[in-house]
Length: 195
Image (cartoon, rainbow, N blue to C red; front, side):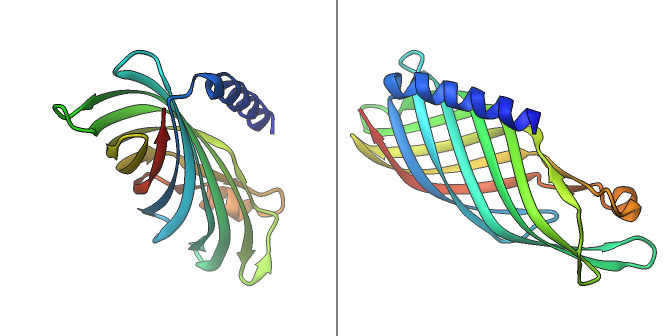
């Protein structure tokens, strides 16, 4: 909880500063597959602040609701199911450049990820007190956008993170199911507005 409050304050401070200096804001739809989760859909928003003509700082906040996770627990392979919501917050530094004299821009950025996760666990069809812990990670993104003030964009984003799981009631969860691997490659498609 302390990490969440700290991260929230940092994000609010960045948004407060960057809103006055922003070069671009946008919204996007997102899709990814991970080792422990398949066919995850969500959406997000971004805000970009220029540092120089080609260098920028970017903030992305995405939300992936209602992802289904299933596993088997311990030597008896007790079924475990979870309905999971993920909210990654990415803050990074990037480079961008136009292709010749066109309005098409290629860009790449990388940085820090703070992953908030929440979910309801069912162990052998009974509700469990198991919960996710917020985690840190990193990401890298490569994309292209085209247009003048209104721009369509497509980007591929690799995010490396995990969601730790803990339980006060079940030692089996702590022993056999400590985390969900969330390393994934996401595809983001959206619209930006620049000025």
